Image: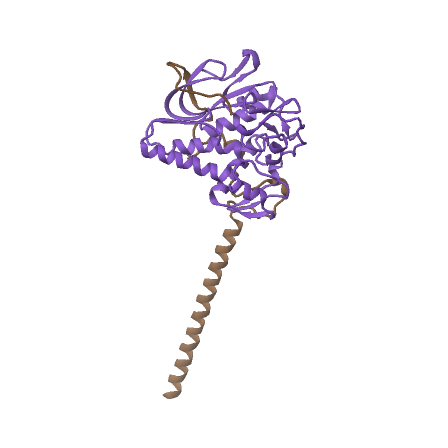
Length: 96
Length: 266
């Protein structure tokens, strides 16, 4: 009877160890997958050691959207809105 | 910034906030304050510097401006503008018999910015004034809740209609957005009997030669208008093409009242 209980205990211990191994492996795989996705993500900025001709910065974007977007990022036309003057000017634009 | 600031439509508290903003920007980006962050960066021995977030943001804006103008509006012309003689506050400049020194060409592509880490090759001196004023005018307008306007030295951002006098004597109504004029007729000084001005051509490192005395541009923001006006003026005869390519409206003024308009409906 005692020998049977001993075998059962040993089997439980092996099962527990197997569960621990499976859990640890799953956790390691998850972390590896997260790291792989982060490294491969296209939005990740280029390393600072990229070619000098690239001019890449973490803040620079395509030149095409410079005039087309407003500073708050809400978009908008490139040109401002102007019309013929209707009264005496309040301001002057004289050059800087 | 060495210019008058005019504000309309702001409450007293908003006006105080705008004043603080201009003072802070001047303290950070002035070429003529020995303790400005710009001068600390320019005088630093290292080539990789940890700059403030505000400074990094302005460098990023300047690099975007350089990119969209194919380098015509270049933030690395600090040494060139000093070589041309503009090495102190404009009000203190006096005619000099000394000829200007050769200026260094623009090297904006050599800059690297990662968050607040700035890599700047040895010998490159920054001058961010090509974007600081326009950006500050836009940021100041954002401090006004309702309709209003902000003008710094004639570079304007407005929300709501405001009538603006133009360099050639005409006027336009700015309904929304920015209006800026770039000029070689102002901020001039004499060196060895030759007029110098502050608009440096990054291709030569010298004050630019252009058929235009002034270019006025209307754009979505004051920053965009100012950058485009500088690029158009530096583009010479191709300036109108530059504005047309980017869908911007502008007016070009030669001496003697001759002008050219691009998509200028006013």
